[in-house]
Length: 110
Image (cartoon, rainbow, N blue to C red):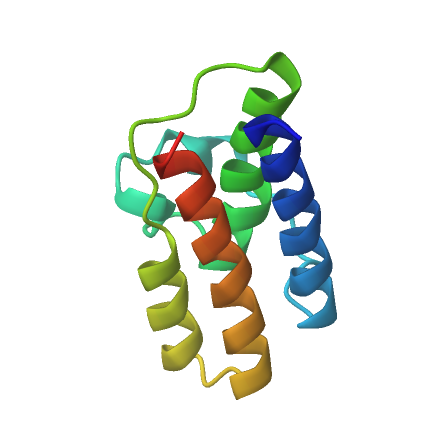
């Protein structure tokens, strides 16, 4: 299995985990929201919106095109902090952070 295949599997797991945590159903951000220059589009999107409409979409494009991975990926700490701030259930927080840590590892180590 290639890193692209592993990443594709991890992205599907992230989607399933977000759905199970009720973090998947949401409004698509307005087009202007994508123009943010802030990390994770924090000024224009919620973190789940950014995960769904930016992070997953961009990484899926890399998987499909078999493009080189970015040099680094370190999203898990931001997700953990956001989930903690939002008072997410411990089980949801653990599962989401685990899958995103795996995505960070796959991207950064390849």
